[in-house]
Image (cartoon, rainbow, N blue to C red):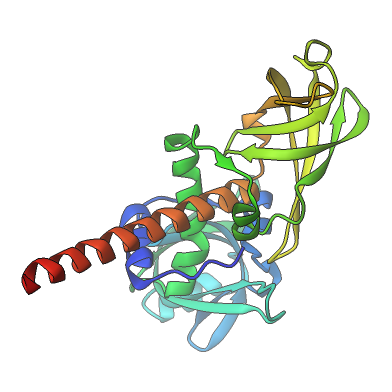
Amino acid sequence: MNVLLTSQQIKTYYERHKATELTFTKEIAEVTGLISKQTALKCMGEFWPCLIYATSFESAKIVANTKSGLIQKLQEANNAGSLKFSFANPETGNPIVIFVGCRSVGYTPYGASRDMGIISLQFTQRPPDDLIVILGQILDAHVNSVLRRGERIIITNDTQRRLSIRSRDIAITIQGVPRQCILRDISFYGVKVIIMGIAKFLENKDVELIIEFDEPSQSFSLKGKFVRSEQVEGRKELVAMAIALDEAAVPMGYKTRINNYISMVRADNRWQEQSQDQSGAAADGAV
């Protein structure tokens, strides 16, 4: 889902999460679109390949070959350099390249390796907005998945469009048996679907469902268990089943989608409230 952020929202991301360190696991690298082969530390005009191990908006840790001459080069440069990030852009196909000025503040061996080390970097400037947006959405989703875990999104034509959900008709597997169902509502850790069947034969069954999104195209597998049911008015053959998702297995990309939507709705509501307040103040002044 494309998210256009205002300067105020970017500032909020920065101030709220500037000291929070994000470790680049395989999942985080995939969600952000990090192109590991194009990340590097630039020092005195030369580029030294490295892996992003973790980063915040104030510092970073990278893994690099400490026998390559990089440490000596940093010493010559008074420990000054520039960290290059590269992220895939699904809209244009061209990478988003970001440089952040930094200083080396030390390094430690990487595991049992004699050649590789973790170099700690302190940023000497606020990162560009692009990096704050890319990382801020994930950090915000992680926090809000706890604070707003019970906030449900009813799937209507409007919410389906704003979430960029491809279809409300989705595939679900119940105890290994493939079925079809209709998406009714979603949250960070829960989903409700409408399905043909009898509630007492479905409750407590393990399930896996696939939700597909557009802009960009993404597909998420969500595992969980049917935990309760509701009758569908006027349709005896159908039942609404609530699914408690396996929280440890919920993809970060899915949580980011949910968080982006909730943040967008809240921003819209604030804008409407401000507009109404301004209109009311103008009317009072005209009396």
